[in-house]
Image (cartoon, rainbow over all chains, first blue to last red; front, top):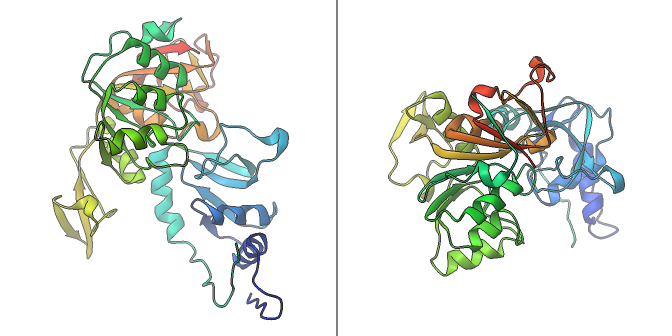
Length: 119
Length: 218
């Protein structure tokens, strides 16, 4: 999907994350790293067919946790509380970095093209 | 044999000066706070600590660093918004830092636990982190030789243990625990509960009790 917004100014961060999420193909395994990219997880509904890997030992990471969902034993690589999706799994750090070899070869993020991000 | 301790202080009382201590946790998740506090009270000096990070805020690992009893830290990601204790020690030359890429940190401990003498890994090739390390081209790709990281002691946090030391973990708090348990001469695990043998599903055990010397409820 290519989205240009030349008529309305730059995308804000939330919109950018939504655009990136929509660009990830079904069936992809993706590691979002830390920081702003992890907000892409908030725009991948259950059933999207995208499996998120977080280096601290999880496949099937879900969106950021809210309210009572916050569990400090369940965090992303940026140490932000997150949720699990159906089919999630946990594993230790050495296994997780072995899995990184597979994940890094499975999908290349779409180039940002002419999208712009504010803030 | 796994010994069940009632008190974290007793479980770490024999850690000597100069020990290399592997400490589990990814930031606060899986950090064995009560064991770290016990080690801080115990007061062993000249420690080398291995952890993914270098302490957050003023508690746990950060409080241990603040005592000045840690001579060197081996970690992958020391600087965070709340790593001010480490930052001050490092800037004033009071702590030595060995920076290790996160996957290498885990794999070097896995190698220690598995009796691997060394291994070739592509991570860090061409960066200052691999300067001076033996390099080899394998199947057209550059690799550097990485050596194991062995611990005298591992302090880890698991969710539950049975009385023979089998461990199950909870969510992403698992992180370095299973690897560190294999890489240390003496492994001490803090858990929320120690149950009788037979109560943990053997299929669900992540760390077999053979790796665990001491468990303590905390």
